[in-house]
Image 1: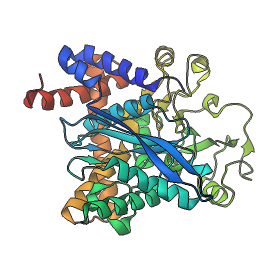
Image 2: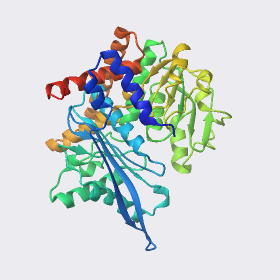
Image 3: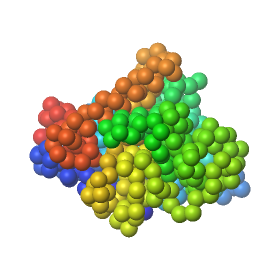
Length: 409
């Protein structure tokens, strides 16, 4: 994987130059406030003892408690965790959330673990991390973790602390104090950004959409846009891709993937030869992994609008190529911040013991997304810079105010 930390710092440097950020503050934001590396001993089912490396990075807490993200994957690196914690700081600021950036993870392959081993590893993460609670640092879910894992984390934290604290862990089941709409939040936010950005380009219902990645985010974005009348013509996952120029029935594709676990073999579309990224369409939503659009394939992108559902799906070298070709881009820190918005709602509900109906969660989420997109688009026009730089600049402005008020410069 390319060095995502260097890519994050590049975005930070560009935005810092735009707003003339003080050198001392720029240095502080270029260096995580706290980075912890630790090991988790795990007894496997067959009696073997293994040691796993884990991380937690707190980027900055000038704007509030650090929050979110626990990633478990075999190739996890410290640089990846640092970058994601910085992304979280930016996303929180873009969305108007009073929180700093946090990210954690374990270098492990969940598919190599039994359910019992996986649970022991997740609980071991909390025991070794010793999180500080809802007012300091709040872990959440990410790649390789889910609501079940967050339930184990919450239980472990409460066993350690000796009291119930539903706001101490995000992305948990609603029965344990999680927020309704948490599963759909990022996908809803991505689709809302696609609708808003599309409207400025004359791309409304009936416009064609291609989506790379049919996981939690991509599938919800696909379903939401389909329900709004957009024509989703191509979808991919890790096993392959399908295409139907007349539009895919996303409801039936959902049924197919629920049964088979993959988009391949869906009777309502043909197998796609080639990359879904290069399909002729109006709107492209990369919802898989980092750097899938790069210098080598950027010129082959045919979509008029790219909405970044994944973190950093466009490599820095590809940005100028796409912009020169007239492509509109809604950057990741705006497009996929719906998840962090509902995580903020989840913490608020847990602290107040006042839990919201789904309709309230969704309406407030869409309101926040509309504000984040609108403010970023307006600043982009005012400064004459791409939306990515505008989003980072807007976020740094907000973080700067908090740092200065605290006397950090």
